[in-house]
Length: 199
Image 1 (tube, rainbow, N blue to C red):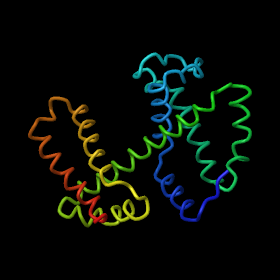
Image 2 (image 1 turned 60 degrees about the horizontal axis):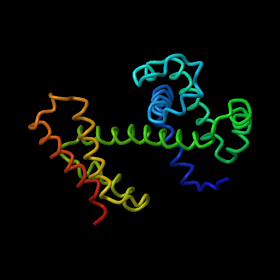
Image 3 (image 1 turned 180 degrees about the vertical axis):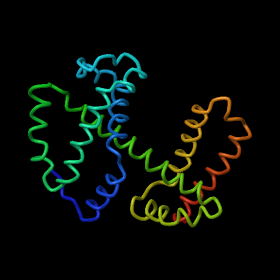
Image 4 (image 1 turned 45 degrees about the vertical axis):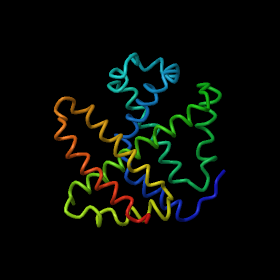
């Protein structure tokens, strides 16, 4: 299916090593059921999945999210033969559960978003804790994004804007214009630090 370089194996293992299955699994499956509501048809025995709150508070959704991440953990541990590792699981989903295979792509995309959000927030936490020298804090991360991942630095500005919107939505009226101005000043410094190795 895929040949992995040692660097790719190392990267996947490093990212996965930061994942808390008990946290990410329920978040990811919950998001799939909310954002892609047609996937709910496979979870009729899970009880109430009628609203976002019901889905995110549903213990059966949370438990199955952990199962999904447990299966992904097996793939990470068996990168050399994921096809054989997933043979029985694929047969069950195809022949007994009749799951549309496109749902696996949807789940993979959502898992990527949830994991990336955790990693990004962890990196942002480092900036908050090292506000005196954000440039040095992000030097290695900037080099990786510039020289190995080839990320367009405009994406850092977009991400900063999205984070600001999410934080504003979370805090509501408490996110005053003064707080927003201070936060955006901080995010500009973070974006500049992330972009520093591009030039």
